[in-house]
Image 1 (cartoon, rainbow, N blue to C red):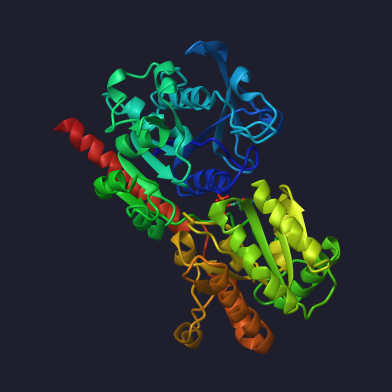
Image 2 (cartoon, rainbow, N blue to C red):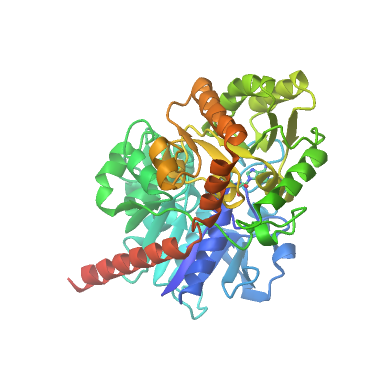
Length: 490
Ligand code: ADP
């Protein structure tokens, strides 16, 4: 199949979260099993320099909605996947991140920026630019691509359209005026289309009009049909149940390989677990923590957002630190949480290392050096860090929701007996429940190193690669295409 994969972020060129990792690794995995997967993303500032395009596909400045644009062609690093970069300097060549400026304020023209990405994706997939390549399947990701299914669904000759929700909490909501400014057909200003309680919703375009809607874990696919996790879209998602499914994300096992990870002080694997200690000492030294093998080192990495339960960590930590634990957190985001964590590091000097910012290498070293990884997300569509932790022999303590529930097996009596345990799961999103669960983990780490090592090996040997999930997407694409053909012939 020829697949066009559209995403607002692709690692290593632009990344604010797991979407970028998925957008780099799923297209590669699909290409590896015989498909031709071209990826489209915006050329944000610095991307053209980093991606070193091999050429320009749209030589003459083409104009869409009054925006001059060019299309550059490159490759996903180390792959045969074509990477198409949508260059429109007026909209994308800016300081800041893909969605907001350097002070964290959303770009006011985000609807225009991502509507352009959607229009170009829809045109490219149908070869409207005359590049001699037409997609069988167009795979869209998150709200930034939500208008693509809407733009295509009434078109006679079109690819099958798949829309993946990586996080339902981000919906691309804008004032009604944005809808009118985009000159979309007036009939789409309706609760059955893009209107959501008086606002324009990009994500609804994807959910309502795609041939298949997926999300990134089976448990999250079930959760989002309920009021607790549906962010107001649960009714629509229930209505779309027949085409809605969950496919667990994989991880890039070459980027996240503890045996051959250039960021680490020392490579290690399931048969050389003792070498992990070298990484613990190295990260303690790097962070200014006491180089003490007997202090359990807790780690956490991620966006400082309500979703991630940072407040639960801040609430549970004092007791754990008083009990002798060390803690490192790498992340950035909401200043409320940065403040709470800064206070904690002042209260426990030498026991807490707080690194605010984004640092890929440090993320690898924390995964390798920590003993336990804390991931108390209130909701978690899939989550990648718990899988990185499992692969690096760092046992995760997680809230049992979404992809966390699908990837971590709690160390209960039965799972310890049959050898399936890989981590620690709690069920109430509270600091007390997290603290209790972390204490359960720390106690096992202290008192039963053999059982701990068995769990580490089990986690390190679990297959989190894209192999199985790429096959699941392949089946889904084939089913969507077959249905489209059947509808056309009817
Ligand atoms: P989400 O997509 O909700 O942010 P995920 O766990 O799915 O959460 O993916 C987050 C990705 O971003 C992981 O690859 C993680 O290592 C990375 N990450 C998040 N924050 C940072 C940071 N401050 N420094 C380095 N990597 C980070």
